[in-house]
Image (cartoon, rainbow, N blue to C red; front, side, top):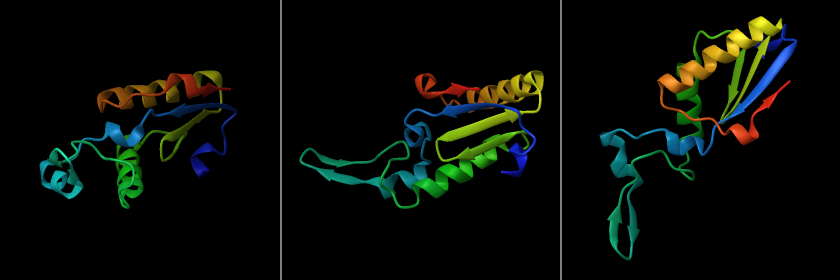
Length: 114
């Protein structure tokens, strides 16, 4: 929260189906095996319902957004701030650029800009 204390302009970005955007490593895929009437299946992406999924997601997002000023991420919601319009715009641009670099997509219908 300290990174937002000087902010005067704010934006909120929501990530669509956030967990599904995070691919699993080959080593961890077997941990998601489910038994169906058609046989055993494993997930290729992080799924909702896994106890450790929120912690894994938060750690990943913290790593992706590390070093960016005026950003707070809580699960699939990010708040971006800036003291001025220009600083806010620059911070927002850096976040969107970082998300694109990591193949993450925002849910633009739920994004807010203040």
